[in-house]
Length: 221
Length: 221
Image: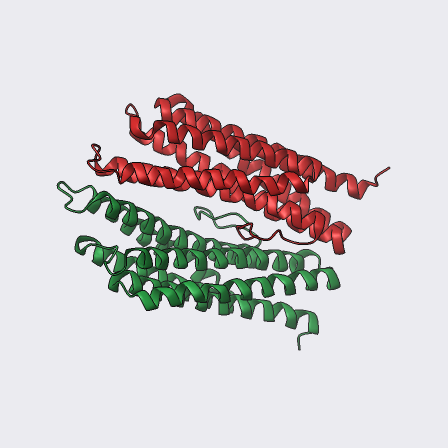
């Protein structure tokens, strides 16, 4: 049986998993709002991000209190610190979903995404969702092998991101400068979302093995 | 006289101040490299970012060891945790300077910045430098009043960022799509750089007063 202290640590992990679900849902809805120029849906993503922020602040508070009260050392200290860093990545993923919803809202009733770009954005949304789900499972199961696979999914996101630019740079791009700005920013938001997902997976590997995986980029703290 | 423990805490702060100087210099040099299409300078910014990363990792390591060894509580715990968060902001500021240097390198021997945009980018570089210097002073002197002023400088960055878009969206923009992409990304990098500077200042206010200032946005952990 686990003691109260380790039960609290487990509860922190459960909240991290909840956060992955919230930001995964936010990103899926933001993608739909962007593609369908859905004002109501984009507003709801923007509003729902407050929940992510509150849950993250609550998580951080509990982690800090646990640290102050129990004064963990070695592996336990590492786990609490890593939790704080993961929660920061997840909070930022929520911000990025909100940024995409804001672009959708800004261009309503038009869609910010022209037809030539639609399929690529749709795929980026799918990869973002897949990544976030996998990160949730990886956290819940402390699955190092799964964490390492997240990197391959991020390669897919990078490939799609490069494809976006190729379409924009195609000769005789028929849309205006505004569309180029929107698509450039949106592409960046998806890419950063995936980077933070990789970062969470990478931290899980560190937590379990004591070493960061080679060749996996990370965002800091 | 301060005890060994508080001397170590002071040494952590001194390293944070060193980091502000490194990332401030990196950003100033990245701006010059971008405006002058200076390949050698952009390469040197890209390479120098490794130093920022190493110093940040060293700082984090010392903070974690201090925590494990001394098991600080209350205000002291808050200071160590805040140090970890500030160092993450500063490391990210280094990345953003490197991103700008990479855009400069990518477009060499051309400049990524057309004449119409030059003055605004120059100003953004100046604001970034001013912000970073102020953050260094604020950290060294635990200057809450100065920290609150950083927010006003960030308003200036936001104003310049909006101005960039206005120029891009001006009728008959004579440059191609590639330039719009470059300017959009570069503008985003300056804006994020300033956001992280504000975040460090905001954390300093929290550290000294126990409360986050109202109306100051922050980046998380």
